[in-house]
Image (cartoon, rainbow, N blue to C red; front, top):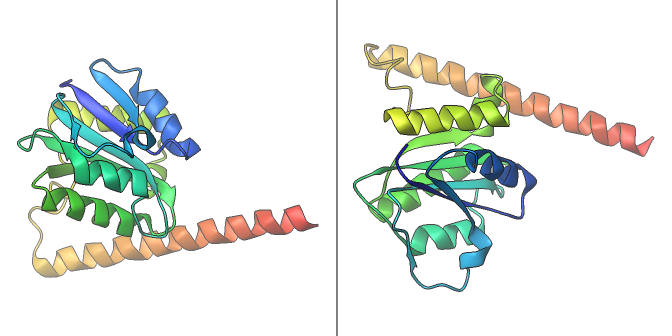
Length: 186
């Protein structure tokens, strides 16, 4: 695997778990985003960078946003963004990708907690999948391989189905949290 630097939100346990799993791989260095709050420019001599954070109501956490805006890395390489949960994770993923693209960084590997749960992947398996995708140069942006030959109408139909499944997932997650909270009160 090419050299990879992971910047993660160290205030969230889910982000720390992903970072700990990434440390098991060769040529991977994990850095806490909070340690770079005061730096104006962050030079990264490694080839690729990855961002791991938890969505804050569709927003990128301030330390991670600071990293995106201040990091100097290879613009020819494809980078990684992983949202490990939170409210409106797809919106946060989109915001992170837009911020990276404004700085001319190519983001080809996008992951969310929903994708991992949909494929029933634990933390270790999810990190293995991300590392494998980065090593093989596979992109996972917008189902390119799966829907390559589809017409526009078929593609929209598949996207609607995916959105419906996502809403159903979020509703079930909300109901499960509500039931847990109700049990705690009684």
